[in-house]
Length: 171
Length: 262
Image 1 (cartoon, rainbow over the protein chains, first blue to last red):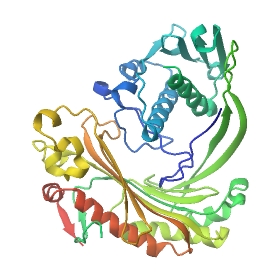
Image 2: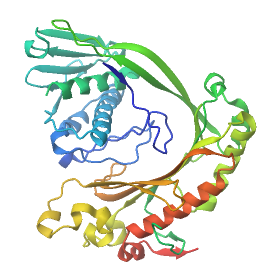
Image 3: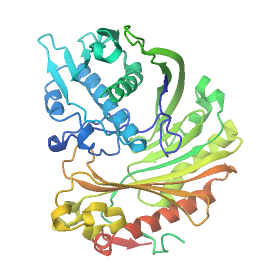
Image 4: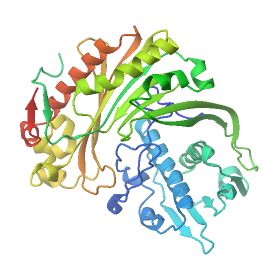
């Protein structure tokens, strides 16, 4: 299976790769705006795929601005990808919420837990050491498996597209 | 014919948060390989701030194997340079890539100003790069109505927005008061039988403001080869966008924004 990054050919826009959407999570109403890619507005995700509840309030406690920006980039990409998929192919899955933890060394762990697999993003003080992982039990592919890779900013959108497709296939 | 003719107005309390105009053309490879210094010289007086962004396009293979970890593999990588030229106040932007030129602003006042700001960059594009034709001409207006700004806090969205766009907000009180999310999408062919109005009517938030607004995102565009004088089509799309928004909002909302006839 090949996945191409969606090109926004049918939208009047200032980028080739489509809109960035800032995150609005239910009652939190916290805003993430990426000043580099200007966000117009945000829409609430449908409840079954609103994975951000509570996480934005926690993210505000991240002290290091570079780590904070990187965390926002990941959250933005997750939001954007879910919106894009849901626009053309309504997502019926019920997705669990993200968890965010700030470690004593200031690294940040974003975890996304499901019954048979777990996904994580680890953002390190040295950003070049940041990574993601996917761990699954034998119900997904017949054997327990784990997978971890470094994660660079330019790869975030592609990796998240893959991860969301994996999640939607296996939930 | 959709969207009736209406008087042309500007609003004292302006709901527009963004206007984008984009003209697409067949790829001009040199834009992606050489920095547009000649183009910059032509517009630098108006747009002195320059930035380049790289947009990544990747194709990933994800082949699950029994008993083996699933490793995403990058098969191809493409990059696109997006050159951004901005006014000193950072309110007007020109974006140039190998496949389009776009202008965007959050300080739109009237069409004639927008035309004036775009004329020079457009002429520079045509003179320097000589695109063969435009294959998509688009004009997008994003309006976000904020009730507290308009003295309309007591009004429901169904009082301010036509029912077809207000969706479930137009239903009975025991339903409309419980609406958590409401988005209406439509694509409507305009009266030239070629151009399309792509409309999103939704509630949402803007720029960190916690008050819910009603957003009308209307993207009017024409596909197909057209000559390098884009202004007749842009003028047409602008006219129809004005008719569209006036048709969607009620007289109550229209009057609350303090219209000034042009």
